Amino acid sequence: MTRIIAIANQKGGTGKTTTAINLAAGLVRANPRHRVMLADIDPQANGTAVFLGVPFAAGPRLDGVNTMYEVILDQVAAAQALQTVTLLEGNGETAVGKMHILPSHLDLASAELELVNLFERERRLRHALAPIVNQYDFIIIDCPPSLGLLTVNALMTANEVLIPVDPGLFPLIGLNLLNRTIEMVRQANPSLAISGVVPTLVDRTALARDTQQELAATFGSRLLPAIPRRVAFGEAHAAGQDIFAYDLSSDSASAYADLVKEIMRRG
Ligand SMILES: Nc1ncnc2c1ncn2[C@@H]1O[C@H](COP(=O)(O)OP(=O)(O)O)[C@@H](O)[C@H]1O
Ligand SMILES: [Mg+2]
Image (cartoon, rainbow, N blue to C red):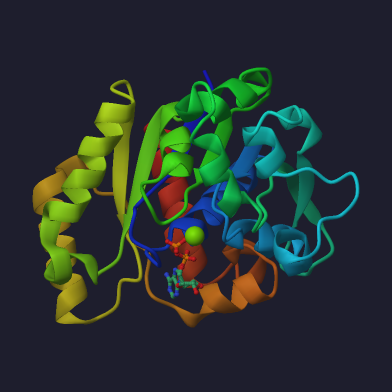
C-alpha cells in the first residue's frame, strides 16, 4: 500500500517544508527503487521553489505547465502536472535517483476560495490522486501553515500525518494548539494515523530542551529523531538542493537520514 504522509502543523516556520523535501529526497537516497512523489499543497510553494526554482513557483505562469492549482480544481489530471526531479550527489554530477513533484504555485492561494463552493471540496486532492496513487511507494504532502481547506484536503488524502514541532511552540501556546491540530485531523479523517512528532530547529537552549522533554512525555514512542538548528538548511534551500546533496557528511544530513530510517522502519 502507498504510504501517503502529510507534513502538517498550522504554525508557520516549524520546518514542514524542510522535512517534506528531505524526507522525500531521503527516501529515494535510502533506496533508489523507492517511487516517491512530493506533493506541494502550500501556496507559498517553498518546496517547489527548492527543486524547480523560484520563477516556477512564483513567476508568471508558463504555457502548458500545470500545478496543484489546476489539479485541485479538477482542470487537469494529476499526471499532467507532475515534474520529474533528478537528485544529484554532492558533486552536482552523479544522479542518485529520481522523484516526482506535484508542484505548487502562488496562484494556489486563490484555489482555497474557489474550492469553497465545489462538491466534495475536502476530497478534491484524494480524488485527483486516486488514478496514480498505486504508482508510488511514498507520497509526501507539504501542507500550508493553516488549517484551511488545502490542509484538510491533504489530511483527507493521507494515511499518516507527521508533525514538525519547533521549540517556540510550547512556552508560547503550550500543548493546546498541537492538540487542536490532532483533534482536527481525527475529525477530518478518523483512519489517519499520527505517525509521529519531529522536534525541529533544536538548539542548545533551555527552551529546546524543555520542548523535547514535554514532547517525549506526551508522545512517547511517537517522538521521532530530532533535527538540529543549522544554517546549512537555509543554504541548501537557496542552492536548490536537499540537505544530502548540499552536505552529505553534516550532522544535518545524518539527522534527516535517521528520520528517514525511522519512517521506513515503522512502515
Ligand atoms: N533545522 C533547521 N535549522 C535551521 N533552519 C531551519 C531548519 N529547518 C528549517 N529551517 C529554516 O527555517 C525556515 C522555516 O522552515 P520551513 O521548513 O520553511 O518551515 P515551514 O514549512 O513549517 O514554514 C526556513 O527559512 C528554513 O530554511
Ligand atoms: Mg512550508
